[in-house]
Length: 179
Image (cartoon, rainbow, N blue to C red):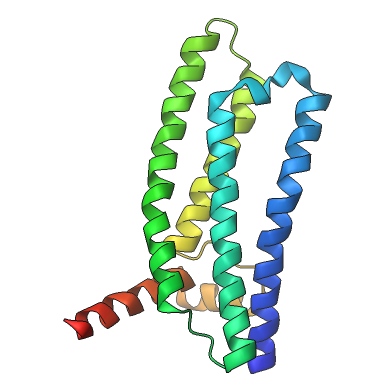
């Protein structure tokens, strides 16, 4: 059981880290190859891209800490200090989401009537992906990438609470016990 859990956490951690590293050169290649998209000229692109990278970093840290703790202490529970930091980052994420909407408005005002629709469309998809990642980490698990999860999803007909959300509930119980 421990080995299976360890492999799963390593998979999640490495996948998030790979995405962080890969998205930077991919954005550069897309911007260089298709200059008419004007991606790097859009404020909304930068804010949504940084938001996505920041969310992926949070996921990387979360799964890495869980994996390291499981390997070193045979305990998969995330440290309360790390959970508190991740919980505080939730507010930063929401501020960045709102800032992205302001960035879209600014780009529409700045570029109208010659809107770079291709770049704005790509930016909108990046923003949408970031919101889905936010929901996936902080609220409800949206990613079901193994047979066991998919089978459970069809059997229960309900989405699971995200691992991070379950851990946040543990913080609340801990804080309530301290009072």
